[in-house]
Length: 226
Image 1 (cartoon, rainbow, N blue to C red):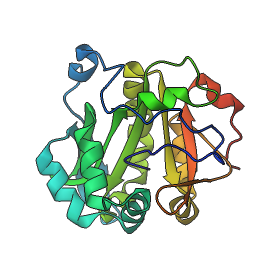
Image 2: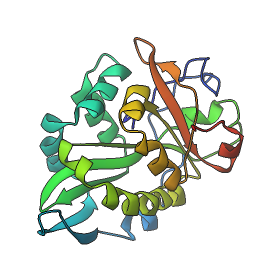
Image 3: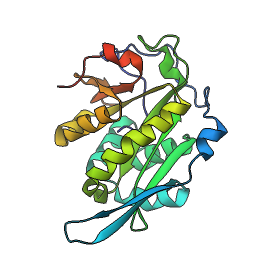
């Protein structure tokens, strides 16, 4: 899931924004939204019979330093495709610009970071005209995250709802190769309330293919993935 959305090319289901996105929140989440929870957690039993505690806590820079050196290959490839800064810089930028961000801890070790950053420039997209409060959700993690499909199935809708409480419209893009490698991601996004565009659009410095996805009532008009 793209950590730093870029203006979509004209081949996208939506038109290119008229202006570059502002880096400052135009629809910042209410303080009550940010402080209404501190941590979410539950235990699971692995195939070896051992119980592992998964905990979601507010993300700190220490978590970022823990995850970045061990990004999943597909997360690294997606971040690299977005621009010239490189994967670690793109991830750090998304982290810094996000007033909502969480860390997923597995047995005390950080295996993923996710959050949402305000993206008012996207409100100028065709089909989103007049929509206020737009943010881009993002997620990246270590290879250990792939073992937590059931946890993500439970956590995804919960935290998507928390983001929607702060921003009425959530929109971003996912790297087409990542979706091909792991088709279940499209089903997980649908479980979280997102519609995923059926056709990818060129994005980034080399026109890499990305599928837009959106969580908003207008999503009903977007052709979804099969």
